[in-house]
Image 1 (cartoon, rainbow, N blue to C red):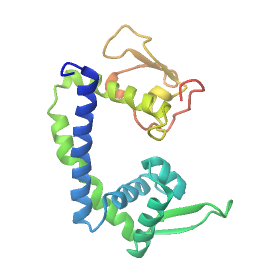
Image 2: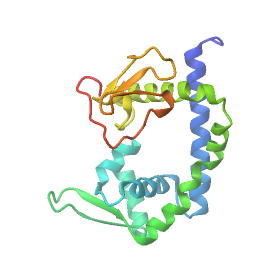
Image 3: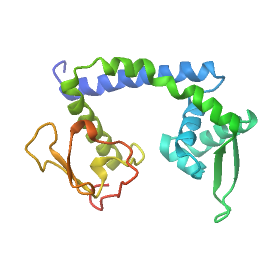
Length: 199
């Protein structure tokens, strides 16, 4: 139905996904990479010195193990990553960026710039609501198993939803003991503790 709001939102998200994928693909292509290879490099760069396993890469991007294996093999051949067996569990393969890989990832960092410029032009008064709705949707998709877990506020032990009357800061963070502005909600928080009933 033309007035089906749920269908309209889903269609709008699909169009956004196309724009994001095109932006990533164009940036990756300019660096002689596939979009998947670019995603892996960016994720490895964000992990810093932390070990990242092949299975973690597969889970993070919803990819099959063979797809990750092929992408990592290509990155190894390009000298952008190395892989080795985990010292604690020989069945686990760990992937690290090389110096060249870090440099290549640096060139990929700006792949969202064009889209961020458009987001920056949105009405400032609605950005917090928009962010909150997106994070709520991501949390629901996590619960349904469609996307991998993130360290976001809505799935955190410290997150206390709708505790305050202020519409701009309705939620509360138990860790900081402060109200949370909608614009302060995080997708990745280093202090995140999984909530036992709000995964």
